[in-house]
Picture 1 (tube, rainbow, N blue to C red):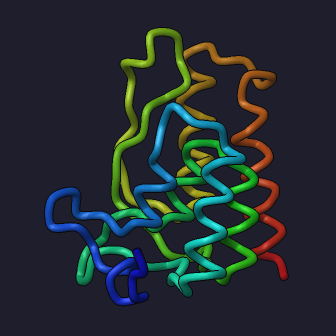
Picture 2: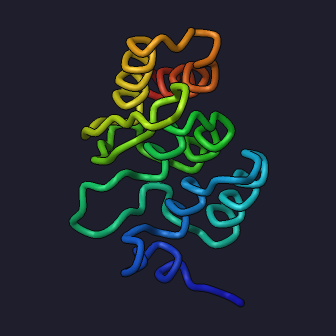
Length: 146
């Protein structure tokens, strides 16, 4: 089926998220598969890398991919014009044993990563277990500097 850009950039009334946001949220698949799907939406369907529900402070696809520690997806979104200065309000799981801890707030993608790294470290997560978040932070720092 063919979808217009207007449809794929429109937020679902059920999930209050765009299709690209849902791709970034998807679990149970490899990051490479998510990147292929996102690349198709961005390059072939002309999706807006910054699309989110209208008038909403929800997270952009870049915030979601950054917080999930998906550096391939972060690089792809930045290449497609995602704006690292847009803040998003949300809640993300910490990478702690049991996975029951979450962090709420409203931050830019890099702000979220800094908050997640700090919160995880406070719960005993080793720096070696935060490598994907650290990679995403470096990509965002590079994009912000130029």
